[in-house]
Image (cartoon, rainbow, N blue to C red):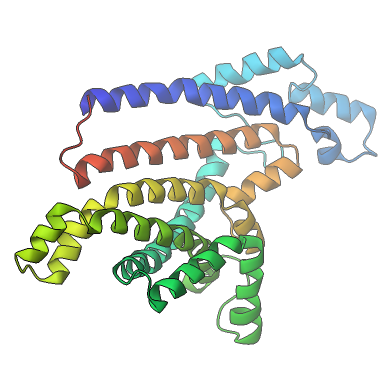
Length: 306
């Protein structure tokens, strides 16, 4: 296990450097000049030249790349053009909000998906099963940019129960978490149902039933546990996507997280901040993937890493 963990962590460095390099060159290909956005098009030429030199944007692209990679290797993500602060400081201030939203969405998704998926599998072919599959289909087909406004219209504007946007306590978390969680639960319902159905007719389940073991124990200790592996994989992938891809939801609800920060950095052509945000997003996904791999050994003792 220790050797496997060390090798996976060693792979993080080249992947991170590859992501950083790709984002660096891609962001410089986008149209728009950060100097124009910072000073305005009517600024004096002398001021524009001075700021361009101060930000090293007058240097050849390869020299800028070498400077950036040199700082990155030292753990320095650079200085934000627009916020005049270290990029790492800005990201660390926003990251907890994204983590909070993602964890809340994950809890909602698991609370909905696991019971519904189990119920659908245990009552396969019945009206209950078809109703749950219909919910899953509607959830998968409804994008966040449509579901979010629908929730706002009902819970905020019509019922006046929850705030429309912002981050001001638990009530502000409910709608964006529901928007992300419902979409995730729709996918997890299908995976849970499919995984349980693949296990339910296995010999050890039939043997447990023949021995007269109570149904609830069979479901919890034998059926669900052996169906967990593909569910864990999907949960890990989806949670990584929640942490790194909630841009639309954060923008829609004015949630001050990493996704909204990334959009703001792109619009302002804040090169260091865009590069830092994407790098943190990539590292987050890698760490979640590693955690999922390690959880396999916890769920199934037969799994061994070498």
